[in-house]
Image 1: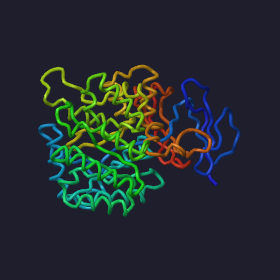
Image 2: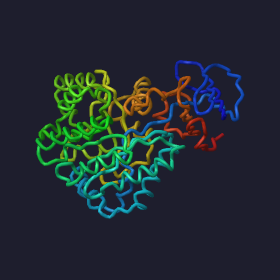
Image 3: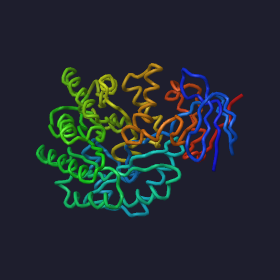
Length: 413
């Protein structure tokens, strides 16, 4: 039996400081002035305590490729082309080393859950899945990994991809991915959707799709969200579908957008903006008043849509930035979405905690409440509403009641 007592924790801005007593990896008690004995105690001195952060969409297998071949045009098309060329040179050790570096960075910044999207196609084959499964085992006491079989190169235009996706699931992947816009025709994009829905139904797995990644509404391959809502409802998959990017929705007329957002909420679909990539790749043809190129977060939340956000890529052709710091991505989202109030900035934290937990299907065991898993992070901030602006150090990262990261800086006197 291992025990940990956390004193004087700021769990909510509108409540007194709380103590948290942890036993055998679970939160057993939360209250004022707890007297339970513990193997170790940590005095937060009023610092913020959050559930471990959730990185809901990231591609560790493609991290750190920017230095090998940069994206000169800054477009999605060139990013896909360059990455395809570089994937042909992958080795197991190379992918493992780059992916492990991402995991270590993320953990040090407070992430305890991650959904990784390794590519599955005729180029990379199942190498990325193999690496992520190895890391899932090696890092099981530090981070929970969900693995997506992601057809970056399409399914119909990438020979053998559907078979490889099935093999990846048999190997232990947790989620079915999709990328319908990377097919040659609208008909193929729709067929792509049908195939991944079929695969998810067959294996009783959730779906996580890259869709509608454009800054316009001219190409129907990038306007599939409504069709996905219909398919989700028809197949009874409400609450088990996630859509990443969906930046095309920012180009819809307000009335049309409002009706669609209500439909997304009805379908129980989570929307996952990927700010660093979305802002960087969109608006490339604008000569003035350059578009921010993101899904309209506030409007969707007002309609009851579950919204999370994530890093997506780390220093590659899609995003030549990033250090696996979700708070930094949250800062970018808050700035570009006009989320400046204290309440809104607290809601940004919800997107990488409770909203993301709902997306990943782990809400029953996740959070700061008695009986939940003791996966916590203590940030060097005094208020939840200041965390995004402070960009604080994660002083302690706790996984299953064990301190796995401990770091501090000397304060100026």
